[in-house]
Image (cartoon, rainbow, N blue to C red; front, side):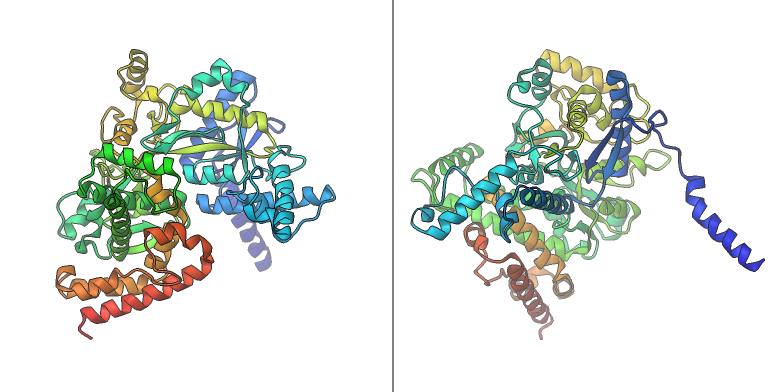
Length: 588
């Protein structure tokens, strides 16, 4: 009897999840109906609402509902690692079936973003080994990029949805994604209308290419808890990135690991980029002169750091000084951090709960958390602010993966996501006509016709959407077209350093975080930065190995070094300097 009770209890324990699970919302979907496979960093709310809305849309137009098989691996960094591994494995099998040799360097050859099969290396003309390698790479590189057949090369996934434009552009240049429409198909009126509903570029950011298409917009900013701020002696809402370096916020900042999330890495890039802008403006250059100087530098095609005669040297000096100031601002914000989490969404949840006073947030996490955790009287426990002139507006794209098993269905999803019906899901209130059913996503649609305009047709569409929106998209503090106009992204300043900056934050603030916080805490206890200049100099020192690190060496030299070796050198350097800073502050 005793054993029977144990067995029954075990059976009940196994059955409980099935007894209490919620019935699937796609009640009319049946085995044999279409299935679309999407890999995405989007949260549950986005997955649920778009799964529901696309199934309805597809049933109305094509007579059958669709189930989306969402694949969640974490942030875009994890997704990119997965996709590259899957495509390398698939290509290896295909290549060997073709009777070709797979070498130890074949994976590197097919994923090489800088390789141009039409321009052989100069050394290939005189070096037989280099020539043979070039011809091998050209053959396998072209074969990979000319094959878009799921029976030959595929990762088993149809779409890469969400994350930042950086990773989608990288996926395209590595050959992982393909254009959803041919040049002829892009001339069809319905496709022309979709693509003309938003610009390809805005504020220096790329919102769409032939390979990826932004479907929703994101800015980056600060989330804060007013009650916790008052506990820290702060009565004003943090509104600039520098506010997060306030010593009163020591141990009260929540941050996410930029090496785990491309969106978080983009937010950190914005902090650095803003400091570059501050430096060039402080040096006396106008925004018009910045645009002119950058255009001249790009046109000259000179090595990094070299300038055409029309650009003053002091301009480049200001850019490099701003980059260093931005890196050090990241370091001081990191010194205030209670933690660096793997999940970007955890920051807003902890700020809302009062576990930390403030944090760096992606706008939609801040707005979504504020929406879901309002008090009964409508008060928001969490406040979100995009620093004015402190963030560009970037797109979260969707890309069609090479060898998509359900290509036609995937292209339909992309058309839905760019259509008015799909765009309503991002910011309509729950229960409104065409809006989401369960979750108010509070994100920013990319289509121009959701925002005020001097064009009467666009303005009329904007007015028709306004009564149903969760946010006042005409508010210049929210309107991405207004925010983007106040921040012009200059790719030369920080784009080439995107990966290096995220690795630098890891070494500087995460792997050496204990030493950083100990040093910063000692400086605060001893009167703050102004009273501890020597300790601050040690705290803000930059690595000198494997080469002295500044903007110029970061752009030109660090490509030659092994990444893991650099991380080891940097981490050892920072730990040593932070210990010395702590000792200097304490007079030891």
